[in-house]
Image 1 (tube, rainbow, N blue to C red):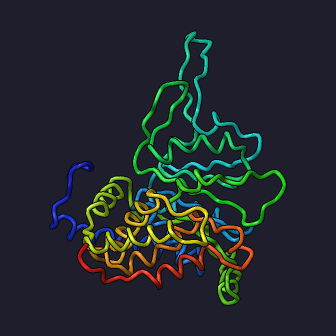
Image 2: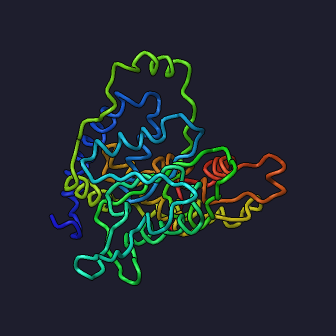
Image 3: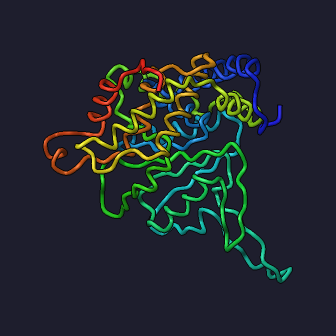
Length: 327
C-alpha cells in the first residue's frame, strides 16, 4: 500500500495486529534494560506512531538519555544525538552551505536534524535562537538552509530531554516551542524495588537493544494509526475537553487547536497499540495529561493557592461527560 494512500477498513483491522504485536515486542525488548518505566516507553511509542515529538523532563541521572537511545535502537532507523550547550549554533542543528576549495563551489552540509529519530539532550541549555532552529522541522518536517527548503525523511521524531530543576545557563522553552511537543512526560526516580533490580542487573546486561522493526514497517504502522476509526461522539468529547480549558478561570493560557489534534492522534495510536481499530473515551483520558500538561498555564492567583496543571486536567476529566448527546 502506498504510504499516502487511504487504508480500507479491512486494511486497518489487519494492520492493528501488526501495530499491537510490534509495539509489544519493542516494549519487551526495552523492558530488559529500562526498569519500572512502562509509562515512558508507552509514551515514546504513541508519539512515534502519532508522528509527534516528546519532551522528557526529570532530574539528572534517571535514564532519560539512555531510554531514548535504546528506544531508537529497536526501530532500525537513522538516529542522531544532539547535545545542546550554550555555544551550539542553529547551523550545527540544521546544517549550512560550505565552500569547497577543490570545486570552487558551495555544497550543503546537512545537520543532525536530518535523521529519523533525533535526540536533543538538555534542550534548554541552548540559546533561544538555536532552540528555534527546531521549530520548522518539528511542525512542517522541512528544514530551510539559506533559502533552500529540504524535506525530512519519515518517520521523523524529536525526543528532547530537559532537567526539572532550572539552573544557571539555561533558557526556558517558550510556550510556542512547548506546544510543538505532542507530549511532555515527567521522568521520576525509580521505586525502591526497581532500583534494587537495576543494581542487580548492572554489569550483567550490555546496554545495546536488539532491532525489532524497520523503517518501512514503521511507516505502515503510522498509516494504520492515521486511519483508526474515531466516532463523532469521541470527537465531541475531545472538543469539549479543549473548550473547557478556554473558559476555565484558573487558566491564563488554555489548550491550542494543536493540542486537540495531538489528543486525537495520540488516542488513535493508543487504540492501535492496545489492539483496537477504534478509539474509546478511555484512550482520550489516558493520554490527556501528557498531551495537555505543557499546553496550559495556571493563572498567578490560583497558582499561589495551590492549583496545578495536572489538577486542572484531572478536574476536567472528571467534569466533562463522556456519553454526549447528538450535537
